[in-house]
Amino acid sequence: MDLSAILRRRIWRGDRKRFMPAGSVQCRTLQKALAVVGSVEALGKILAVPTADLERWLAGSEDPPMPVFLNVVDFLLEQSRAFITQTNGRPIQNQPAPRNGSEDK
View (tube, rainbow, N blue to C red):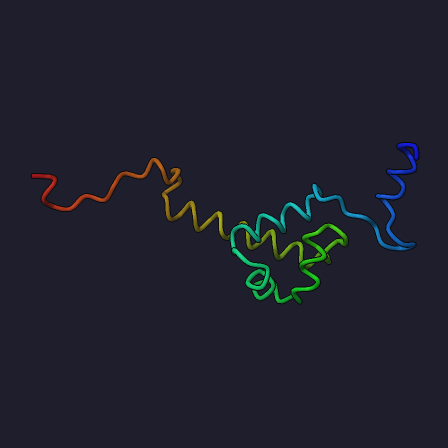
């Protein structure tokens, strides 16, 4: 099989479903949200979507609907804002250890 046939086969799955490579923006964004949340079930609850749909999107076999994708982006932005607020914009490893009053004297 030549390269163009392989690419055509990967681009079209079935006669109407577009193949989403594992490295696509939608798939990588969903995978990042999964890493933040920790489980497919928890992410499904946050996004209010069935776990089976989420697993297909994470596998790259389908595109998530645009409203779901935008909710994932909003979720990750909110997590980033919370992290920045919590660390005052500094990486965690650069945070000074909390001091108690006895160390200052």
